[in-house]
Length: 267
Length: 253
Image (cartoon, rainbow over all chains, first blue to last red; front, side, top):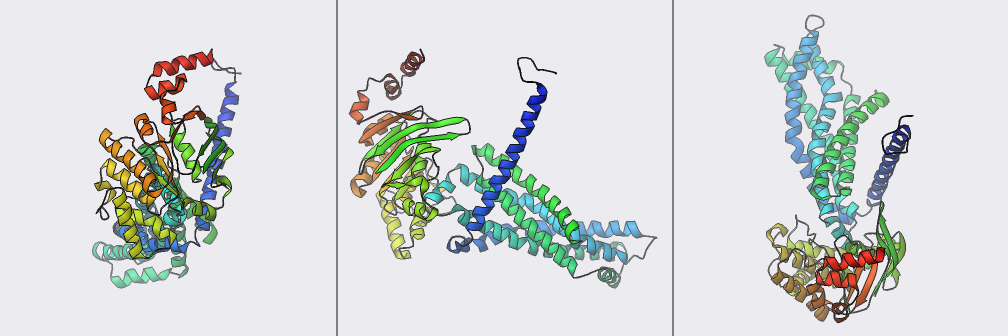
């Protein structure tokens, strides 16, 4: 068997050892995240601590995210309208543009694009703020003042993000569809009635429920992952940067995984 | 009384405390000195349950800290003020709000009483009128004093200081040392001070203990420590690395 210079341990054994260590690390990390979630759930009855902070967090993480969500929605709506027209022209009636644009926006692009964009804005915001508090011992200081940091810092952010995400997605969907309609009317020579006829064609109320279920789960995941990354930050400014990046990347990956999961389970 | 009994603590493969035992008597100011990274702050965090020992225990007023439930731990923390190395003030809150946080948590005072107590705590640390300033507007020394005001606002029985004078100029260091003496004189608190500044330790301490390789190497009054013949302690207090190296080589041989 191949051996590296200066080592009596075979390369194969070392590779297996490293793989094993990586698996153990991953399982331990999942366990720590699970404990973090349990601690957060256990802090829920402490309303006196988290109650006063929820509205402020809803404004900061939710309302202040509205411009970026709407900006994305406008351009997504424009592109959806034009691509739908490009796809169906000459094959099926043009009013199907409304159906394609509406369905795509409500079911997929509204929740997912908003989720991905806000995993950057909201996730980075939460992880860097809590990470800085961790490395500057502010979270320890909260503990010494007899505050439960999960109740004071985590619960308000998780509740605010989970509650505001569906609202943001509703606005994004409405604005995206409106942008698709304006595009269809001005660039595709469709009438408003034609577009709306297509929009209504395959619409079922479940579409909205589906979008809201997805948006709620995305908000919950972003908030939990980001608060966890913030809480477990170590190593000064470099650690804050590392965990903030990890919060954004992991949130984005989980959003895509959840998107597929809901499609399998609900569609 | 604060007691560390045979405390062991490791972070991964790094063994920080190895049988650390120390008793801080009622009413005294004890300074724990030692090299950077020796585990002084780690020891301090065990007193309020921010860290749990791997082995051994820490007792405060006879209560076994590692075995306390969350509620009992919070009760204990109301008797212990903690002054952090870099103050750990909440940047988004004013100095007054920072100090009021612990008082609000106790829930025993109305807003007028809290305001009065905040002003009183700020006066004790000579920061009168700083209630509405934000932490980023303060100098290093002022931040430390504001951190001290937050720690003493709920009139704790014990005060834990983590490097209260690190990073300060000599004059501001003297000001902080005088404040530590004032806290003892006027509030009668029992204090455990983590420092590596020997001038400061001599000024403020009733006793000084040196932490080395995870346990107490020597403990005594400032005079006893000043006159020590132990080569490592002497090397540390006099700032002579050659003495320490020679002693370590002697031990290894």
